[in-house]
Image (cartoon, helix red, strand yellow):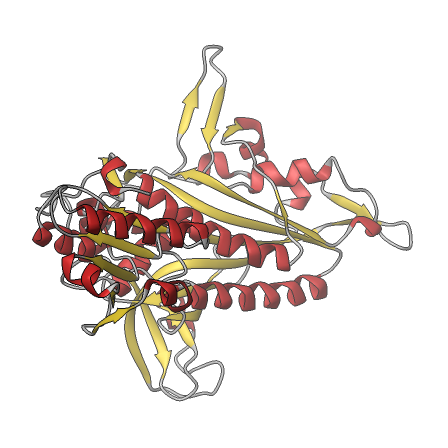
Length: 414
């Protein structure tokens, strides 16, 4: 893509109403636009990052055998009344249509997926299976803050699994945990993200969270000094000693919850009559699990972990483009433009995503914005490189600059 055609522009100054690292850099770099507190629009570069994260997650969900669906965002009141959450879920957005029917904007989808599945299964032979979706969620968050980390409208992947018994759920639950670890490793924050024991709310005695350790988080995580088991602050009173090794020594760190897993059991199956006929012909409730992962929150967490004093620093797996090509000089430098055009075509034809800064702006502006946008590789074409028939290459996180031939470029950054 040519940067001259990119409608979203960078901003020199940090937005006055933003305090968090992720919101400041994403706004300044033209990845997102704040509409109101807790609500953001995703601009072309930001959406490319979101889609990269989605695809990484999608591949892992497919490996688990998950089937992708897209569930409705508008929910009938009756479904929420059956589970009792119409009255108890305080952050639910409620609206009325022209016929005075009360509806909810989807904050979570147990009230939709459970009756839907109930209309499609009958026998034990239909189980187990799992479905997942990428969906915009809406929550009346009174403490919307920290940019993408706590919003009122956000993107989420939710996976729901359906089983004959608890043992089968337990087995799948472990697989999801392993899959989540692989996701966080792939997007570049695996070392900072830890598996954490948490409260189960009204679902079960316990659940698990994936907490990315950073001062930008708002959850307090107690980590065993001996075996490194992590426990969320909300349940630490129940465990004066480590439930894994018995140690009393812990360190406390701050984290961002980027994923969670719950064993739902039959909590939603019973209200909706989600049953199956077992091998003896007896009707039994389907056992369920749910597994959430915040796509937009994960994007913000990556920025909190990787950004530096000059701007964004995207891991190569989620960067909107792999390379940022800068052609230096004026529009009259035909040799420079010709080499840049050739490199742009070479990379594009090789399937390497490249953003070409072909704008008529100063060299200083191009270098500054290249750091701000945070693409993994910066490629520079100038009068000096044209003379030597070389290309200048620099990684975003290193200071070393190399000169290489265009023929070797694809192999180096591909």
